[in-house]
Image 1 (tube, one colour):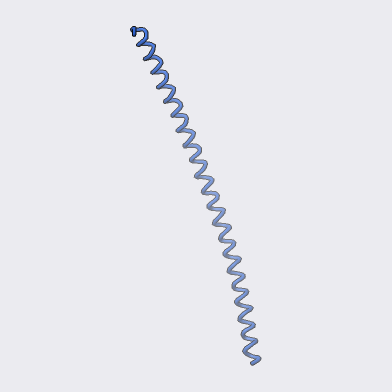
Image 2 (image 1 turned 90 degrees about the horizontal axis):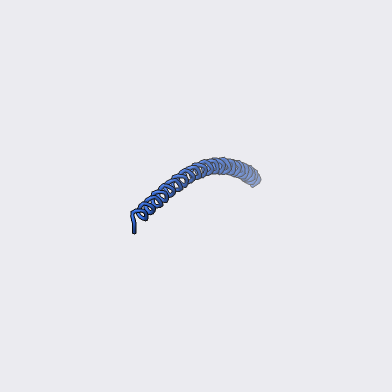
Length: 82
């Protein structure tokens, strides 16, 4: 190989390494951006889920209280009749 071939190989290698570094950097930025979006979306969905569960539990408690109230009334009426 000649000195010219060595210089060409060095130039091509330097360009390849620089291009690889640029692409890797862009990929890291994109991954960080998408990771941030994912964290925000997960937090929002978690909040929505908590609200939905709280509402559901509230409805369930209300139904149970109504059911127990009705049962107590029926039991009180039943014991008076006896």
